[in-house]
Length: 562
Image 1 (spheres, rainbow, N blue to C red):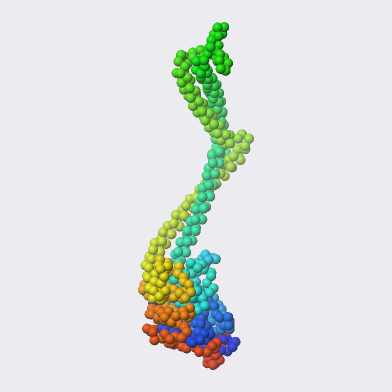
Image 2 (cartoon, rainbow, N blue to C red):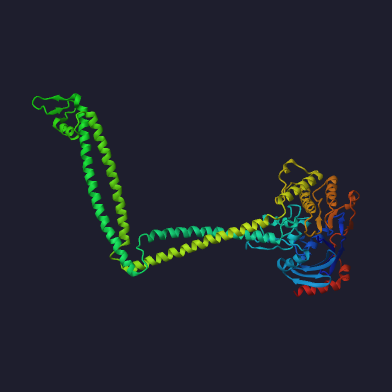
């Protein structure tokens, strides 16, 4: 496993001709003072700023006039990087490796080689997976005094080209869960899913088109040549004649059935009226054959009833009534069937008439028929290719899923992280039952007021502890933490925070800036290199500039010429 340590930093103001030089030891380094505004934070900001990450300096600190030179070691190999504004030079063992003004491409690519580590994220504008800038390599290892204690992993700026949920997923790289191949596979899977979705939409459109073309071709006579078309046109012509004849026969049958139905319905009414009036009929001596209803004056003809009765050869009115109803029902059913058959014949005739139109030129019919057939063939081939491509992409996704299942178990890593963070919060006397079930690697918990620093620190150290537990083969970097006690008035709470930091034994280097460290030094379990800053706003001075003048001016010249 690779480890990185800062060796020293040289900061020079090229306008004021002032500078500051500071050396660091492996292990714990403490930058302390009794007063504020002595330059602790500016020096710590300059460390990862020189490495290519963007930080927010104090308004009085003009970064555009500052040359920052940092020497660092990776497994005993010495490197030096210098930055002036947006220009960088990188050396290895005294040999020039890189001059560039591109952090995201050139510098990040060089770091990928020397760190054997990189982070790849999906750009929210281009949607392409790309090598992320160095800030994401350093992200868990720096807590800025001004921005780092108001939100977890928010110490660096100019990282908005990636969505916030994707930014925090960079932690998976530090935990050894993700690597470049992993992200490329996931990105490829997403692209394949998008392609399948697009193909499905195209498939729906093709199927609708084919269905419409099939309906159209059903109205045309099929033929490969004009001669065949002319022969085939005779068939629908004869069919039309046959359909017209069948429709005439069917229409006559309908008319006959409708007449018969009317007669039976009328005769049913005769029987119905006779049954109704039979009990109330008075016979006139002069007109015995006519019955008059005393209530309504209706004249009922006995002879008419006799005719009805003789038609059905029945004397019983009740039974006669049932028989007539049965006959009416049978006729109605038969009539309905003939009407439906007539409708079908008419639809078929209309279809044949569209297929055969004597006023239509045979050649135009032929061209239309051939064009539609060619279109159907073309779209059918497109449909086949579409379905084949979908199947191919689905198979590729299955292969990718199989490879992704070989990754370290995220659930196991998450469980260990939760355990570590929970214990850290308890150690800091900041536990709240509301945190139970809400500790998540990718969704940091938040706290208010004086507890905020404790909760953020507990989560970052929990991440380092989880990395140590699983012993992932990823590079370990210096942990630079600025003013972890800033919101703590209590001496006891301040001591708890510092003790938790000094309990870490997995990182190669810790650089801590804090006030009045001497008040807590005896309570720490590890010794540290302690540097005390005393003069306000005098971090840089002319004597140091003079001492390193040659180095400063050589690098300035080189950087200005990039």
